[in-house]
Image 1 (cartoon, rainbow, N blue to C red):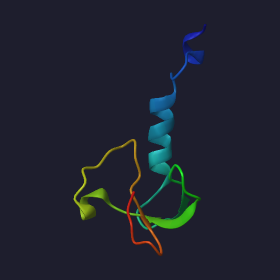
Image 2 (image 1 turned 45 degrees about the vertical axis):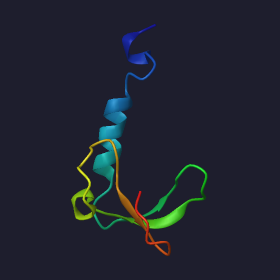
Image 3 (image 1 turned 180 degrees about the vertical axis):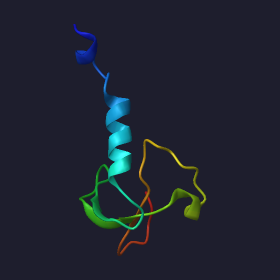
Image 4 (image 1 turned 45 degrees about the horizontal axis):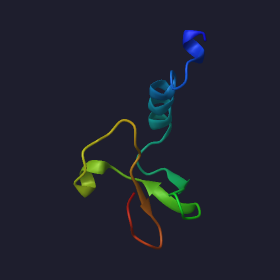
Length: 68
């Protein structure tokens, strides 16, 4: 198999691109496993006491006031 077609070869690049796509304050429909998509806003992890992770985007859900 060609190196560029190897399973999981582009996951890190795709995660980095997805992280750059969202900015703090953006309105999104976030999906958590087992629940329907729900309106949320992108938030800063440091505001909630979490460390920044370039693979994840922290969101604050409207209505439930939960973060994920």
